[in-house]
Image (cartoon, rainbow, N blue to C red):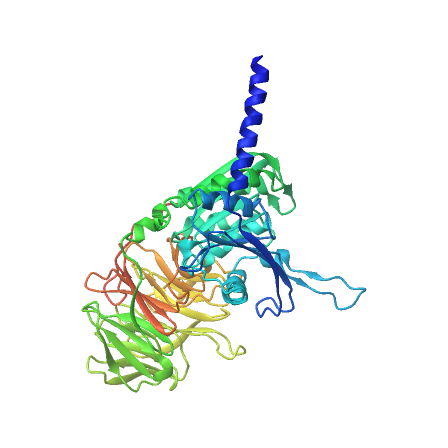
Length: 565
C-alpha cells in the first residue's frame, strides 16, 4: 500500500470515528418562537429559536448564549460537542432574527429593522434583550437562566457582530463574552467611534474574540478589514482579554463558522472565574487607581447637585427639590447642614470659608457661614452654577431657562457689584477656573463644547473659544455637559451624559469614567488629600479615590505643568 493510499485510509478511519463519536454525543433540542409587541422597537415581529442542551435539568441557572440573525456558526451542534466534552458550561442558546414591522397593506414593504437594531450605538438593543426577550424566553419555556454577566455570551456576524459588542459594552454586568465575525465596526451608524471610545473609556470586564478576512468589504461605509484590526489594537491597548483569527475570506460567515469551536473554548476558558478588567490607557492610569472603584455614599434623594469642598476637605451637596444641603464629613458620614434652603443648585466655597450657593427659588446668590446662616450676595437672576476666585470674585452661569432668554455669564465683584460678562451660549451650565485662575471654563450643555475664556482681574472675559471637544452619546444630540472641576495638574473633569470626561489642557478628552448608575450631573474632589472624586448622580452620591489632587479656586493660584502637544 502506497503512502497516499495509507493517508486516504487513515482519513476515512478518522472521519468515521468522528462521525461515530458525534452520533454518541447527547443532542440538545431547538424550538422556534415569535416575540411581538416590543415596547422598545414598536410594531416589530422577532422570530427566534431556543436551543436547550441535553444536560440541562433546571436544578441551577444555565448559562446563556445569544446570537443575532438567527442560528449561525453551526452553533447547536458545536454546543452539543463542547458541553459533552466539558469545554463549556451547560448553556441555553437563543438565536434571534432582527425585527420586522409588517407592511401596512399588500402593496407596501415591511420596515426592516436590522441596521437600526444592530448597527446603532446605545443601549436600546441591550434593553430589548434584557427587558423583553430574555424574560419572554424564561416565561415561555419555564427555563432557569442565569442573570450574571460572566454566565452570558453574545455573538453575531457582520452587523450582528457589532450589535453583540454593543450589548456587552453597554451592559457588561449582563454580557461579558463576545464573539464577532466580519464585524461592522465602520461608519454606518457610528460604529467607527468604537476604537477611540475603547481607548479612552475605563475598561470593562469583557472577553472578546474577533474574526475577519482580508477580502472583507471596502465600501461607502468603511473598510471592514482595517476596522477589525483597529478594534483589536484598541482592545489590546486598553488591556482587554482579546483574541482574534484573521484569514483571507470575504464578507461571509465561512471563516467565523470555522473558528467558532475554538472561539467558544477560549471564551469559556477557566469558567466560572471572573473575567479580568484591564488597566486602561496610560492617561487613564495617571488618574485611576486599579484597586479603587466607585462606592455608594448615600442615596434616596430627589436630585443630588452642587458638590463643593471646603478647606478641610469636607464635601457639601444639595438636594434641590427637597430644599436641603447635606454635608459629608471626613469620616464619610452624611449629616444635614441646611434644612430649608430655597432650591439650592450649584455651590462653591469662598476664601472666607463660606459656602456660596445658587438659590433658584429666590433667584439669589447666598453665602452660608459654618453655622448654616445665609447672607444675600446678589439677586435679580436665576443662576445655575458658580465658581469663586481666591479674591472673592464670583462667576455665575444663567442658562436662559425658558429657551427664549439669552444665556449669560455674570461676574460679581468682591465689592458685590454684578455685571454680565458674556452671552451667546446655548445653555451655559457648569463653570470653573484653571489652577492658575487665568482661564474660565464654561460648559455649553446643549452642544459638545466647553468654552474657554481668558479671565481678567476686573472679571471681564477675553478670547472666547469653543475649546474642549466632548463626546456625545448616540442616544442624544448634545453632551449634557454640567458640573466641572480641575485638578492641580490642570486636567478638566466634566460631568456629561457619557460619564465624567477628563480632558487635558489642550482641550482633548483623554479619559471617560462612567458612574455605576449611568448618571452624573456634578462632581468635586474632596477628602483630607482632596483626591476623593465625588459624583452627584441623580438620587445617589458616589465616590472613589483617585491619584490626582483637586485644585481649590478659593486658594491662591498655582501654575500647572504644560500639556503634551
